[in-house]
Length: 173
Image 1 (cartoon, one colour):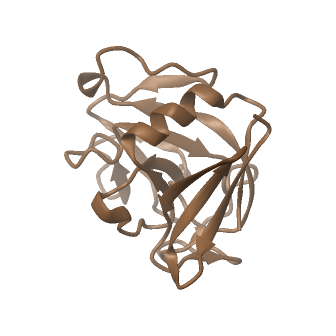
Image 2 (cartoon, one colour; image 1 turned 120 degrees about the vertical axis):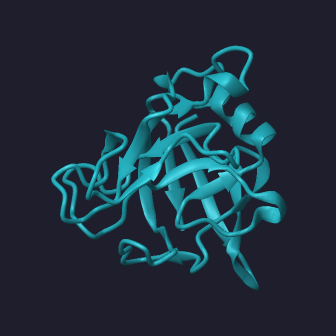
């Protein structure tokens, strides 16, 4: 599967459709929809073409490691993702606690990160303040908006995971 495509819904830029071959899968987008110039905390999903780097799963919420050709690592309780533009580890995984550093906790109680794919946004090179922790993850009920990620139902994300690999790209916009 070489390319997946995300487009915003006409009339509600916070919701979208993921086009996978001939299938159309509903998804949630950032509260500000798809944006051209992504900034940290702007609530937008970045426009562009991104590789799927791999991901994480919460091992206590799965009976077995989800099947995929992508690298997938079990989350640990102390996993975080640095969103502090002043820190040298910006937009990278870190261990928590990290005193004095702003970071997103990956081990969440709400189930959104039970399965997470790392979208290759702002990674090579990393530009501080241009957005961090842009993932594909599990959607909230009713496809409520994300902070800038693309979110699918747990079942749809699991099905998608089986079809993607290291040569798969995600085109947003």
